[in-house]
Length: 524
Ligand code: 1PR
Image (tube, rainbow, N blue to C red; front, side, top):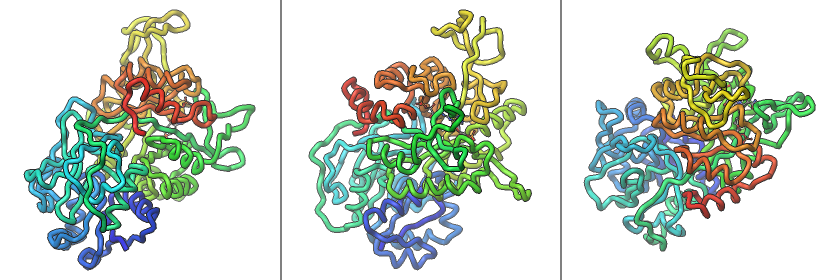
């Protein structure tokens, strides 16, 4: 029996699913005695240090947690579950952590994108029983903006490089904690979890030891999901957002099955977009929640879900906040949520008022779950202009002239699945959303969507240069070379595709092999 401390963090369901997939049963802590009587305690945390510490105090978990850990009983902390062991965090300078490991928590100080999101390696600093069966060149999933700085190097188990070397896991007796997420790190992550759960086993160090690790470029499989005319939930795919063929919604398969297939084929992340979410009420949309619950039971890479996340009033006038909607998605197994149309409206409001409301979906969800959990999905289309002065928007000089030979264009944001163009450009939208707390940009392109013509490199460069958060390139992938191009010609950290995977034109493995052959770091 594994005891799990759930303080309301986003990723509890995926940790439970991972532990249960290893044949163990999980008991959720409901009070202090559950902590003190635990055989093995797992403390997963994701989100903001401050709200975690506040909740631990509200639930009177602090003292029993300190007593349990000080007694050197089997403990595994994940992400914030590691940071909580330290006395102080820059993320909440006014609050005290548990102070059980000497050191503190600091924000990444690097020119690279922050948060550090993706698959990175481990430099193994000492042997441990949790490493049994690892080769040493595996990559693990990280999603964080802060990392621990330890005073006693003897507790350092692994380090990882991201701009500089930081501590990615510690061990002190039976106390083990990692910054990375074993529950979301595929087979390698499940192995570490299994080793922790098995208690026995000698301390080992993998054969293949690296001196430096590298963040891999991510290949993301995207499933655009909606109900077809018969009401069945299907994976569909648009051509420039038009999902109908011969009047029917294209049906490219079952969401749960396809997600499982892409996991097995090596996708680094899986994204579900409920493309008619703008007109539905997500919490009434049980099928989408069910897709997430079923998928997260056997897919152990990060899951993002988008579509319809916004404040909402149902037919009976009952009001729901976007935070409530997001919370339901996190409880159902999502690691990140994606906001589309609502982000455009929020940015327009911000630009009109010149200041944040503090109550927007982006601000509220990032405050509680951390900015790394909030993706903004942008649906732009090119508008050609004859000169930069023609419009009051971010204009670029393009190498692909317009129908009339126009040498300039701007990228108009749209809402409601490309149905409504807005007086806002994609670069400005990305900038404002980063300011409001978004942790990642999913940069689609209506012009390239479903065309197999390749990613819009000019769009991706324009947005990636304007923000310091990671950018996901999306729309237009047709050949393996397109992925190489986007990773060598832009700062994109990841590339998303849909059609070529659904239509089995190019397996994910071929994309990864081609990238590896051409010196682009990928996860195997
Ligand atoms: O606006 O918050 O309700 O969210 C709706 C979400 O659904 C948005 O993220 C929006 O991007 C997405 N969406 C809405 N309508 C469509 C449509 O296709 N009619 N799909 C749509 C967006 C873009 C990508 C696609 C890539 C790769 N699709 O997700 O997967 O373009 O495709 P490709 O590799 O085949 O070229 P809200």
